[in-house]
Image 1: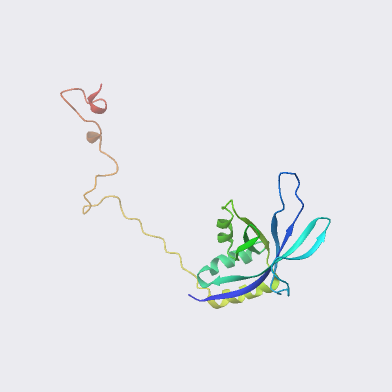
Image 2: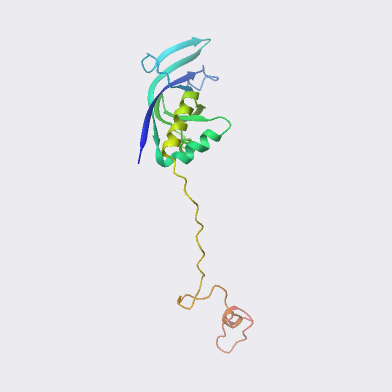
Length: 178
């Protein structure tokens, strides 16, 4: 299955805690295809306690089997890149919106959808053009529940089969109860 690996620089922000019981949490805010000459974890800015941190460059792996998902992402009002972080480390970067949604279900991770850079949207569109195969939907034909060849019982019981007569009692209720 064809795939392509792109490198993205990830930038995060950390705000001062609101209460004494909380701490600083890094949250991804942007992605860029222009890799910065900084080390991962480098402080880019610190204004009034709001810190901007470069998290380094990370791989964005595009798979040909997910092109339908990438098309859905590009058709969205705001195409996005999902960045999943465990603590202060980037765990995964993806352009698949459904994978991003699945990652967000893990309470141990911080997952943010950041705006997709225009240059990445162009690269993603080229990847889709080269590898997308439209899958035709084929509706399955329903198989009847019973047939002459099928020994299973019919789905709807006949009136004579619904009530069992037992020990000479009336056949008005289940198990002969009248």
